[in-house]
Image (cartoon, rainbow, N blue to C red):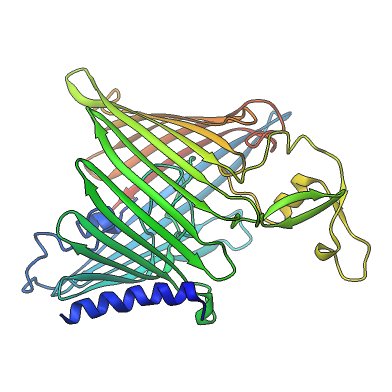
Length: 431
């Protein structure tokens, strides 16, 4: 077993020895803080009556994609349903499951099923709180980019996802020390056939005046260990959050052109810092405070590609290590190899990004919200303009319309594909 895994396991054992002396968000259901398994005031009594609640949501989607050079739209309709099981037991024990099904008549398999999350919570003498199972962790403070989050298996998306994020399988631990210090840990047991394949993350969170900050670390065998720092503060009526991480060598495979050959590997030599900062503020509009909310976010991604990556249409031979044994090396463009090997992650392609998020509540009517967002790949000048409205009435019926426009020069990150716009019309109900 590697030293890194032993260190992670040691943390959990030490916490146990100490005891011997977010869509429906499970953290909202459990009335918890950001990274919590702390008991709520209502659930603090050991005499709490056990209860089991079932709820759900169904969303119907009609999507239209405009294609460059075509007068016809690509049509896609599908249905997403979620069932939520929330069980409360004595002594602050809880269980939660989020089961999702998608009905897509255009897919090869019409109906698909997912277990997005399934976990249960328990505590040891209310000193250490444990969550085990498949779970989506709130690890990181920014809205879109979370450099310190190496535990979740699915990143947040700029364009609204219909459905819920996939959870990571493992064991989360929270040890509070008064109201000002917390230790969080996560033992990643997913895709680990042997113990030396386990991964682990630790976080120490504390207060300095009005600023909450944390130091964190992540390690897994065959990967470069990552150190992180994040903070959250308020200056006047402006909220500022940020996070950064660094590792000696990158943990993501990239496409390299070496001596005229394309290769896929990780850069093990250079430091790989990542950083994000988010500044947000609410503004009064009419007779309501914070009716208009504006947030700006910036992301620096040192391992990202330089611009003009998609402009290179040259075909290069691949390294022999990537080719079929004893056969001539195949050839590909840079972009072709990137997409063929599933190495592309949207919004993490280049070095510099910026995003603007705005929302207006009580838009036209009380129950309607207007959202207008923009993301830009600063390196290649491409971006996405997103605008939409959401209406929810007292009967939990939600109607939405969203338009996304892909902007900027061709052959950039957001314009390399033929789509030029996307329209989503949604109707959903919660019960």
